[in-house]
Image (cartoon, rainbow, N blue to C red; front, side):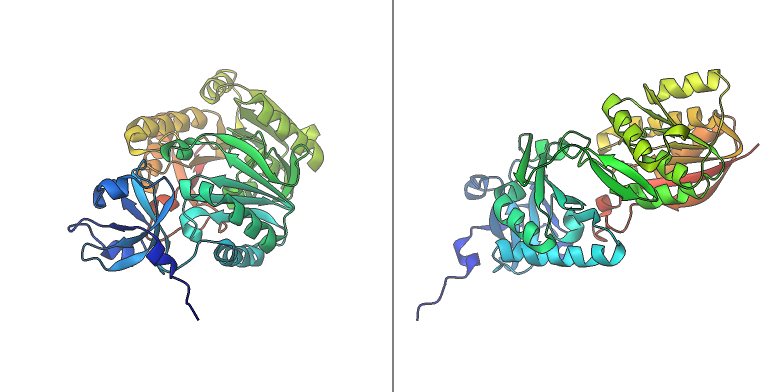
Length: 404
């Protein structure tokens, strides 16, 4: 009986340069940078997302990788077993492992199901909204395997609708175009999402990212503990973010600020669905300008939250980003009532916790206030961190109590 040829023998090989450090990869680091790989004519001819066997400088196999010579991250580890076949059963195994943890953590199917490298699926994000799943294929290899991935996702989770959100900066870095598509089922308008006692409305076809930011769930909950009887200001609210969670915990009122009119419309829909509309108001405008106007008008709030987009998405933007975080903290400090609370958030990969904390403290001080740092929050457990990859710990939330 003739035996099948092992998959690895059908694949090209790529090799680390002799001085490249293979130990980090053996210990779990998932990336190979362009300057670490031998990029001869054969390697350079591989199509983006191609599979290959990675070898160290002495030609010993390290595992199965996906290669994209157009990316600074030229290879991503998919499986330590170089014989693995990247097919529907392989995806089912990875998705099943990811689902098992989320099902233990959450009593309803609303969460991030796959968080890229930390779930063994580099460059892939999947958020789940009940029977709807939104895939972000941010790497070329995922784009090339959408059919078995979608089939595996439906088989493992039972979702009936699968949306492809092919937008964002990461795809551009991989040489991929932008595309929104429904891969299975149908989507009819925004989806209601229960979270922290409120109902949020997620626009999975036209909203930011996948339509909702599940990563802030525990930080919403912590801030909500400070909200009973409070006047709340939620800046960069998106679809209601911290404001709706605060109202669910008994805030007297919440003003939600965002530059996006569609996002604020969804926030108001969420407030109405939650029964909070009489305590909820929105204001469209530039966050910095609104904060300055509120301070000039003498407004003050017991709880102020600023959850901006990434001001420092990459190292070249770090210094400018830290100045923006400092300025935001200074302006926000002006509208916090005596003894009130200020929550400052950063989702910038390039700004680590210490740098962000220092910028925030400088801003509060330059706003003429003294503060206690009472809590530091991070992304929820459905956004796990890969210990070997510092970039996977991106979200920081600092909760300050300001003096009188």
